[in-house]
Amino acid sequence: MRIAYLDRTVHETDGGPKPNGGVSTLSKSIDLQGSVETGDKTTIASKDFGGLYSTKPLALIKPAGSDDVSRVIKAASRIPRMTVAARGNGHSINGQAMTNGGLVIDMRSTEENHFRLLNINGSFFIDVSGGALWENVLTRCVSRFGLAPRSWTDYLSLTVGGTLSNAGVSGQAFRYGPQISNVAELEIITGKGDIMVCSETRNPELFFGSLGGLGQFGIITRAMVKLQPAPDMVRWIRVVYTEFDEFTRDAEFLVSRDDGESFDYVEGFVFCNNDDPVNGWPSVPLDPVHGFNQGIIPQTGASVLYCLEVAFHYQKGDHPSTVDKAVAGLLKPLRFVEGLKSQVDLSYVEFLLRVKRAEEQAKANGIWDAPHPWLNLFISKSDIVDFDQTVFKKMVKDGIGGPMLIYPLMRSKWDNRTSVALPDSEIFYLVALLRFVSRGPSVEESVAQNREIVEWCIREGLDFKLYLPHYQSKEQWKRHFGNQWTRFVERKASFDPMAILAPGQNIFKRTHLS
Ligand code: FAD
Image (cartoon, rainbow, N blue to C red; front, side, top):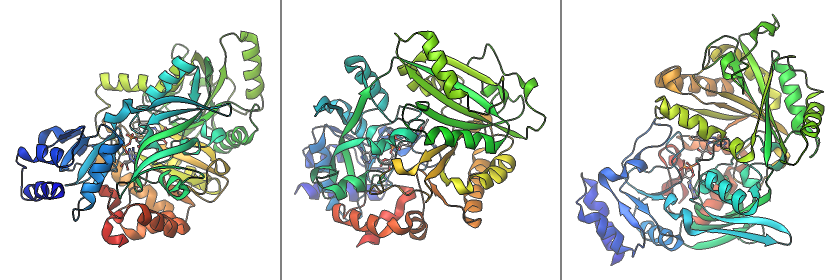
């Protein structure tokens, strides 16, 4: 009877605007403790950070907790063609958290449901909601316990469930692996509506399938995240290279060293060898008062230059000379351009919230809310020189209106049992073209250039994978997963006979699996 109500609601919507009664019918039909919104109010569910796609969901559901999510999925799974998408904070680029005509579950409404410190045999973990923002996990863990997760993303207004469905990488991943390597247990509502707890030893297929599983195995309602003591302070340093081979040699040297013999964070970016305020020299100094001394760039400097970004953790009680000495020792073997170094000292929390400060500025300048046709790739070490020659030095040599990140990661810090598809080599690079269209090429030009780059990678046979993938056809998904494809499909089918999908992920419709 209850399902019949939901079914009627769906058919009422088929031909046009939905009667107002439909929402309350939906809510009552499944005994929802949370709330349901539709029509104009669903605007957050019809958009994402990318701003490239817009869809019209049937309803936006704000669950009170796991039982609500389970009820919604159970009800939806009995309706032909009904689709469900979990939405974290909607910071996807290509509609991954959307569903057209389906139900979007807004996980942010569950943020407060879990926040519990666990001490298991002397190791600390925090149990948090899938809908919690990482920035809140950070500030709460540090202020209450002096502890923090070990692996991060650069920007923390992302949800726990959202990044665990992809990977979650930043400058700490070379040491601790991505965020998906730092989780001990998950609670998941499967595509059948079952509430399941999983870990490496308990329902491991669901656990590893969901990590990097693109939201296809069910909805993560709780995650148990590894913690470590939080440092008080960070010295954040940028040094500049003119030669790509020297930049990569030093970056790879740092990420390959043992714990205690390297920096605590290693990233890098490409910038234009000119005075463009967004893409060029002014984008480099951490301390703008000292500016960028372009006079000392060697004449060999090409159209683009490279910046290695590192960070060193320390405690407030450490003597400044001890910190200086340790940092100088780590910088000594590096071959950056003498004199092109800038640094700042800031608290650990301020460091991890650095992109939030940039967001506030960008919002004030009106450039944050424009579309973001971003491209994220993992590229094997063996192909990164070719990529530099063709993409950085030619295709995007004039800049893209935002950061062009490049830094190495170690495959051995990733778990092969998760769903993430990676290049084959032990060292591979994250490359991110983070375009802000109001300061660079138009949306159309950016999308076309992204496509050109990906097509070039395929044509040249590069060992690469899209990060945050968003393919349209089964063939493309098969190529993406490679020899993991069968495992992915079989795992998904056992937990999720219904479709939890997004427009860019139409391969996951039930029709393909049954
Ligand atoms: P959404 O965009 O809402 O969802 C992403 C996917 O996860 C969708 O498929 C959705 O259905 C699924 N999903 C969401 N919640 C759940 C859940 N609870 N259970 C199951 N599936 C779920 N990524 C990095 O790795 N490193 C970075 O440094 C980084 N920086 C970024 C900076 C910015 C400014 C932005 C916009 C993105 C950045 N990203 C980064 C990418 C980001 O990690 C992903 O886009 C992430 O998926 C966004 O999280 P979200 O919570 O907004 O998820």
